[in-house]
Image 1 (cartoon, rainbow, N blue to C red):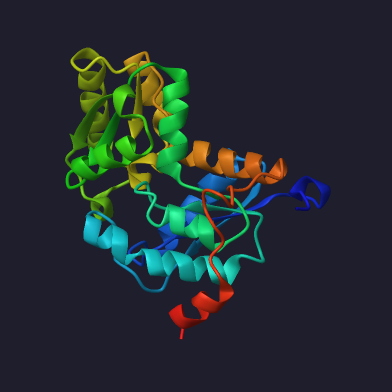
Image 2: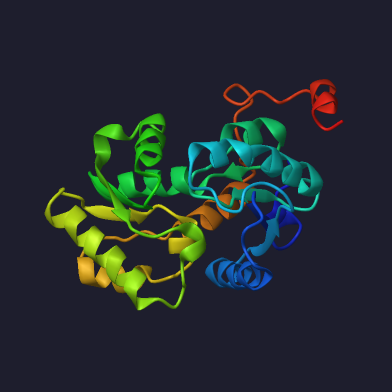
Length: 247
């Protein structure tokens, strides 16, 4: 593999496998992403898939959209980030392309486990069970202090809302004080793109991690170091079988 550092700026695609975000919000997220990394980040959204991903049904439903985006853009970028904290289709995406694919949840949970012995995850109202399953699947169940719910829907997140910030602070404080968390992860990319991590961490006194920064940083690091997923763990999907999928 030719490393991006040998060619110029690392190009990362942040893939949104749904259609519920307005153009202005997609542009806002792209601006934030490019402020957080030296790589060049492009937000690419699907024109199909669910409006938001707040259930296992929507989680599974959006994977075809994600794979379609990957196939459309794989030659244009050096690495990819799945634009949903549920990491939908992560294993499939890694089989599908030869370039690094990063799931923000997996990257952030593993970072939390390096920064602390026990971490908690904040999630939106409909997904606490799925977050626990995610963390167990990542092999970090013993490190999980709790999953706490911020009563908010994805499409209702107002990024200027002080009320939502207070909800996050309240649940994060409970995670630290009552559950024994030593770091906290906001488990929704809409919450993460509020970009209030420093404020919340200052109030908590423990790390409040930023999945946006961590996932983009991980993707850039892997690409720049010439790393990609193991073909033993994620066998390459055959072109012959793929032809039948996109007929």
